[in-house]
Each structure stands twice: as C-alpha cells, then as structure tokens.
Length: 335
Image 1 (cartoon, rainbow, N blue to C red):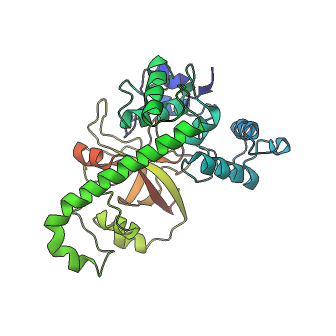
Image 2: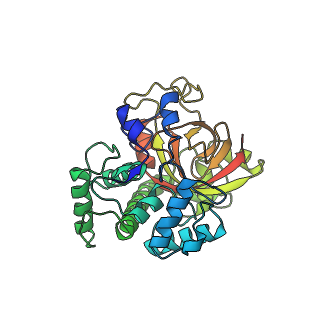
Image 3: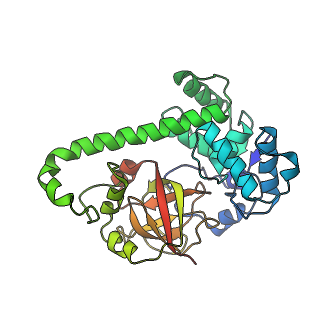
C-alpha cells in the first residue's frame, strides 16, 4: 500500500475536500503535515530530502532520469525531468512535484491513500464522477469512479490513475472551467454593452460588478479587484507562481470563521485572505492573485498543499462561481 501522508488526518476524522472545507486547521492537524511521505509536501528546486529521492526513483523508473542522478537533491536536472514528464502527461507544467505530478508518476490504484488520492477524488467530485467524501482512501468507490471517468473519456479503462488518466482529468477540468467562463461572459455582455467603449481604453481599471474568472485577455484579471490593481502596481514582485485555485467561505460546515492566523472573516466578510501551503508561501505574506486581487496569506487547509491556493469569498455563491482555476500568484511581500 502506497501512503501519501494522510494517516494522521484520517485518525482525526477530518475529510480532505476542495474549496476550503478545512477552513480552520488546528495546530494538531498542522503537525500532521510534517510527515515525510511523498506527495505530502510540494517538492521544488532546492529541496533536499528523502521525498526528493523517492521522486527521482519514480522518474528513473519512467525513463526520465538517469540512475546516477538519484541523490535526494532537487536540482535543475530533476526539475527538467519533472517538466518533461508533466509535458508528456498533459498535466500542469510548472516543474514542481505536487499531488498531481506525484499521483501520475505513482499510478494510483485501489489500496493507496494520502494527499494525492484526496486530490484525485476532489477532481472526480468536481466532474460528477465521485459523490463520497474525498477522504484520501483509494477504495472500491474511487476505483469505480476512475473507471467511469475513463470509460466516458474513451481512454484505457483499468481503474488506475496514471499519466493518461491525469492528463485527461486536467483537460476536462480546464475545459469545464473555460466553458463556465464563456457562459458567464455571454450572459454579462448584454447588460454591459453600454460600458464597453469606456472600458477598452483602460483595461487596468477596477470593475467590482464583474465576478472573477473572465478570460478574454489576461489583463482583465486585474479588473476584478476593488483596489488591488493600484496597490499591485506600486508593489515590487518578489516571485511569480502558477497555482491551482479554489474558493471558500467563512460559513462552510464545521467552520468557525476564524483563520489559522486569528482573523475573523465573519466579522470582515470582504477581507481578502487566502489559504496556502506555508512551505510554498509563508503565512503573513502579501500576494496578488490573478482574478482576485491583493490578499494576505492568512490561512491553511488540509487539502491546500503544494501549488494550491484557496481564496476567501464573502458568499457561497461567489465561491461556487469561482470554481477551480489555474491562476498566476505574485508574491509581493514574504515573511
């Protein structure tokens, strides 16, 4: 049985689901994230540990890395191998080894467990193939959901989640998001026609009337912030990361409304706060998220690992409308 770092979380009885259901994570749960199972933490260039060595072994087994390069150091050669694998698998190409890349490399099957399995279940949930809790256990229900998805997409039907299945999942998720965005754009064009001329000369202007996630041009992402555009232009960008984004509210089941850093979002529903993996973006950092605006990294979540980010929204409707997107995140100030 391959384990991907969920055992402690499962003993606490906390399901791992998308869009910030683990809005408030206790210190005990955060300690569970210290396990060293492959897939529990994002691996990127500069990391040196046993997880990197496991990753390199998988890359070697798949023919992407020479055996003499297996040394536990995530160097440029390892990153190049990861990028090549991601490209061949048609998954997100970023040179980072997170749950998607680890899952595709490992070829998940019945009996496996961990963060990679939970992320797979979340993707199947979003596409309507999996109705149970995303608990990180690859059980018979998950196996059947994978087979249903494979059958629907006319790919090899074996109940295993490998490169082909992950690539098809990635395309399906991206496609569903694009379709939703196009429908949203179409529905808004009619009432907004009178303002088209005034908006074209100044695409950088803020437009609080439009919800996030419209994509006629990437520059329009800055329009969705109420004041973030002006602030972002005056802040120096330290680094830029492409991340998978979901959204949540302070009123989800089991939520207290208090972030991990103590911010009361029920008292401040319009506050821009994002949940992050502290190993990727330190808590307290100021970031600028494409389509969302400037925010503080003030929360964590059981499913928010690696290059994933969860955006606080004032209402459930806004969170559902945002869905799941790939966004560019600029680190403006890092703690």
